[in-house]
Length: 592
Image (cartoon, rainbow, N blue to C red):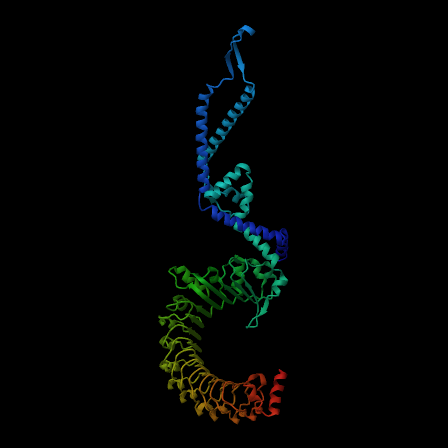
């Protein structure tokens, strides 16, 4: 760990923040330039045509120049009729600018020859070389950047041209083509930006009372993370190139990993560490694909949550059989668009104890293979458009809890079959369209929790109150107008929710539920609250808001556990209580 820390400090000191941003901008420009230039070979073609035209021009010049040179003379015979004066009739005349013309003509000839040779060489070079391909193979062998890509088309041609002027230019430029080099730069920038102190400020204690670090929309993972050994939950969201190095082994308290819309890779030592320590893994993706193979190495994982379009049943048998490596998996949560329960779950995970499927409103058709999960204790089929309770559930004798939320259930006549599930203690039929509860509900003698809220129930059958072990009953958001007197038989009831119904009067039997701690009666049609409410000595939460009450009974004083902030009622009704009762309620709240 000491060596790694020193290495990180040295790497971070190579570039300061400003230089790092400048280098990052260069990488982006090179990337855009490459995408734009590498698509076509326009520059190459124009250059080739230009060279060909120049060579043709040179050939034409050297063809006509010798011919016209024969007509050029610098010494001219002149016949002048001045013999009487000079004694000569013929003279050899020389132009005064002849010498200058000779020099210029010689220079022109040399220039044309040089121009012609250059054009010819360029044409030969272009025809001889493969200028639309540029390979960095030798550089990859000699350097640490083995991922430098070969380039083509105009980008390759430009690099070949650059080599003619500076052979080292392309080698230096190639650094900006390397993803490895860019990633190193990103990591340096990331480490500069995210210090240990800054990351510590992002640590929170989540709803499960665990220390969590949630990283959102970063370019990678700062090295400083691995110095925060107190992390219990690591959440990565919208991080395109996240990689867990071997340094993750420093997070000795890490038990849960959440990867949301991120691409996560990891070194083998990191996989080995997570294999032994990780207990919970959550993956969320909006793209269709397989589960990452490193997941199947997590032999000690107990809970797996998959949200998105992960392919579970695949034609690749090796992929399917990989699920057998998750031998300690007890709980799996799927939020997907499934037509059937995946075969890999029912065939390869027989020891599964908790199965949760949220099908987001899509119909789950095939459920027969559910029978194979004989060890299942909790079953959640949410938003699966079932319409009726599946018969395959009734064979799962170890079930303790069933949740059938939002399945368009209209009738639950099959509820009689639940009596065969001797261990069933929690039944959730909430958020459906159930209009009545069948009398067979009374056969569920071991039921402790019943959720029937958000339905269309108008009457409660008396047989419901045969479920003497019932501790939690939620009938809120229905169409009830009354509650039977027999509710008093539920002597173990601790939580009763009747919010948002049309109840006008409460039966005296309700106040025989002496263990009641939470009573929710808001938004009903109650005209008065019976003084018998004082018999509920264990009451800690009472909701009465939204009724037609005109006063509150003074007997509320007997509810010693009830505090002002847990008495949900209009302020005007509080004023109807005797002062001593109001003071007692307020005093209880102040103590808290």
